[in-house]
Amino acid sequence: MLTVKHIEKNGYESLTPAKVVTFTPAKSAHPDANNPHDEVIAFGVPMPVSDGCNRYGNGMIYVMNEAGSTVARYNLD
Image (cartoon, rainbow, N blue to C red; front, side):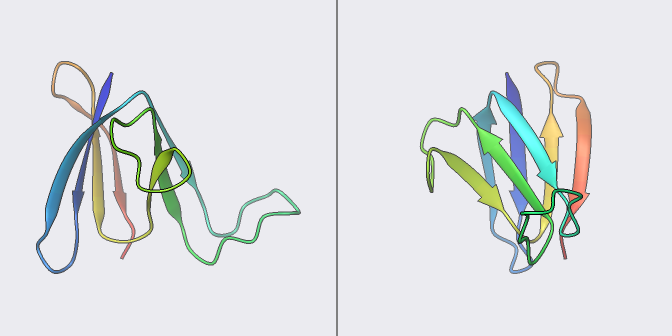
């Protein structure tokens, strides 16, 4: 299990557990991709915001493992 910490520019912070976290760059190599910005997607969250997952498109996102160590960091500003 992973933990996702999201810090928005306005100072709002949230923590949520997730099973899988992915990063999709705006300039994805996939020819059908139409991403206007980088995006972090958290799957397996207890209260999904949209289509069964949480999508983050701005702010700082930290992903921690079960031991609390940061395993990924994304600056989407």
